[in-house]
Image (tube, rainbow, N blue to C red; front, side):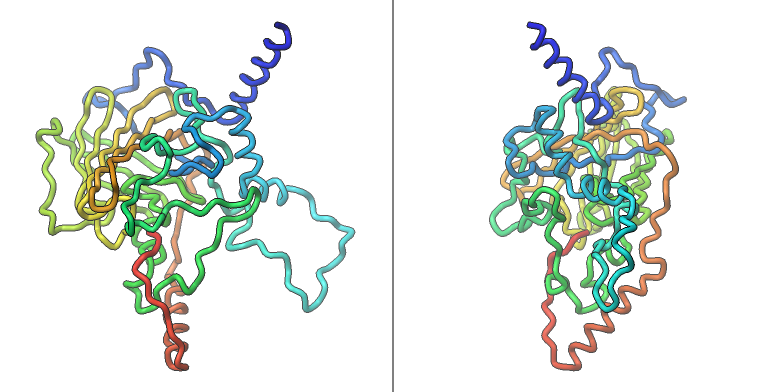
Amino acid sequence: MRNQLWAGAALAALMLSLAPAAVAQAGYTPPKTSWGAPDLQGNWTNASITKMTRPAGIDTLVITPMQAKKLEDGDFNNIRTREELQPTDQSTGAPEKGKPLPGVGNYNAVWVDPGAHVAVINGELRSSWITEPANGKIPYKPGKGSARYEAPPTTAGKPPPAVTAAERSYEGPESRSVGERCIVGFGNTGGPVMNNVLYNNTYQIVQSPNHAMILVEMVHDVRVIPIVASKADARHDPASIKKWLGDSVGWYEGNTLVVETRNVHPQQRGYVSDAGKLTERFTRTEDGVILYQFEIDDPEQYTQVWKGEMPMRTATGAVYEYACHEGNYGLLGILEGARQQERRGGNLELTADDEG
């Protein structure tokens, strides 16, 4: 019995150490604005090693502390951060002339902030944001999506497979990804479905009696959401008007802000097509935590309605500006290089799919 008690205590301590708890407090009453709406204002972050889809080898939404620790210990960015915190070996001497320096990828660890822990929702360690379908995968129809946001399984401690230059499109500025063009954030960070990415997972929410505003730090996307009395009063612009991040309308249901989004710009190529609908729910579950829930109804792309949820926590410390390309001279170089290849008879592969 004593050994069982010690084992239970050890597991409880491990679970607490994995991530800040997101347990919904019983009887929690969220703060209100001066006009009586649930107060969601502040800076929030959804940084986590938990991603939209379930990793290979995990069959359940809720995982054990041991499974969570294994995922965290094998996470590429966690490993890289630990390695780069080690002091330089002074005995190795200077790099050998003419040989390449060790690669650090696009950024070394100091520049990224993807989160280091598995997400905790209502006291449960979660393997994916997706809650339905039960397998934790996006239910694409055949030929739709091409697993766009489902990265191939990776070996523990190794970076995800890179997207090769040949998989991009070089025809002109409009054929490049909207993230690369600094229109909306990379990896669907601005939504619809506000996804966590490699860094700048910061959102500022500001409310007024008639609007809610979500500022997405990555590329400074701004969602201005008009507030109506109820779902019955929700009206969207004509379907012919497609907006970056979609056309959103919100209303309050008790302590929850509900947001319905339609008419997403087709160039986003994200989780919701221009014919689909996203419903989001923002609920304060305790001080410093918003439970963000989403439901995607898009028969154009998916075999069923699918759902998910993630915690958004109070962002601590400074919010660092995301300045995109600061003039985007990289895009100029990419297109100039493509024209040079064309003049030399090169064949550039043009693709429709891209991140953004």
